[in-house]
Amino acid sequence: AQKITQTQPGMFVQEKEAVTLDCTYDTSDQSYGLFWYKQPSSGEMIFLIYQGSYDEQNATEGRYSLNFQKARKSANLVISASQLGDSAMYFCAMREGMNSGGYQKVTFGTGTKLQVIP
Amino acid sequence: EPEVTQTPSHQVTQMGQEVILRCVPISNHLYFYWYRQILGQKVEFLVSFYNNEISEKSEIFDDQFSVERPDGSNFTLKIRSTKLEDSAMYFCASRSSSTDTQYFGPGTRLTVL
Image 1 (cartoon, rainbow over the protein chains, first blue to last red):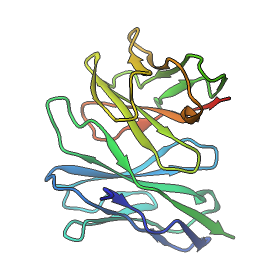
Image 2 (image 1 turned 30 degrees about the vertical axis):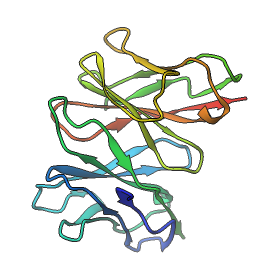
Image 3 (image 1 turned 180 degrees about the vertical axis):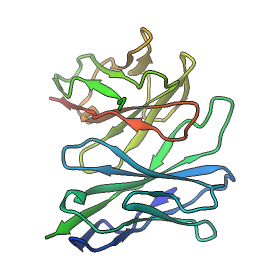
Image 4 (image 1 turned 135 degrees about the vertical axis):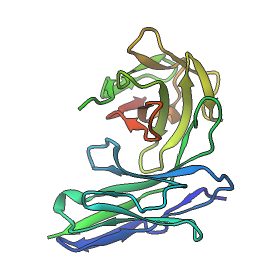
């Protein structure tokens, strides 16, 4: 079973509008964390936002917010007031569990390609 | 703002050759990772490294791969005998002990001919 599922391979949004990118996850761990990364066409991986499983408030970072619904195992990214520079690939990712060495890896989804239309 | 750096940005090599990809993690970080992304596909975990030893590795990380922290700043990934299917973008990432967030470098694009 996929640990991270992103069902939208591609999305379009009008400039200045808000957009929601979907992400569902699968884990049996009680302690986990969810990330969103942005990958522009230049290829680098840019950290956007993080939500821990025990965080009661939804994470926000500027125009990015994470709509965390624990019971539904979803962690959707909301981008408000889209800009042309937001056009990129967006990856949802998860870290699971902890051991004496901390958590060891992050598992990525397949990504959603967002295109912002002027 | 501190960032992870990687060199080279692009490496072209012949099949069967050895390559070393270099990373300089953020200076106070203690956890180091390598990931790869084959063109058009998702990012895949290769290996994590902490306290001078491998913490976890994926099934991709076979005997052809090795990692090393040769000094206090560099973190390297070596592929002993490259195959065509090793062509990918390789990302290094690092994390401090006080946060869950891994910060990624800009990647090295490896092309095996």
